[in-house]
Length: 185
Image (cartoon, rainbow, N blue to C red; front, side, top):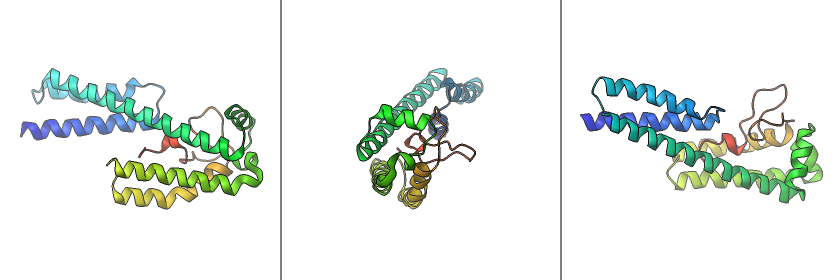
């Protein structure tokens, strides 16, 4: 019975941490503080020991760091695809985005090639997450079904520079197309 409780606590703790890192909060400790608070109650009532709680917090922290690393890697892949497809430097891309241009405007007649390349990369990331067991086949199918819409929004919307990803449109709800918000990666 106690092993089931501990396994459940670990699963909840890791889920909370991964959720917190996918939000990309400015306060990296916020998710850890929530987990610590939950675990403190379990330690207090004798369900788990302090050393078990500490191990769960460490596992959650490690999972969060791994998720951040994967997001950075996936973002770098998208940056590379965009710059190579458009034949511009990352600095030029950032400057033009900062000036309020959309990826579609920057791409010009290369827009369709950019969209095709980004869809292929995101679908590749989904396949990698499925192969690694990070998502289910149902989740992969659902994500792939939304990829074209997400990429089109990412390319066509004017972004607020400085937000994480290519994903926050001016005057519209946040766009979830960027790799930084791609939870499966």
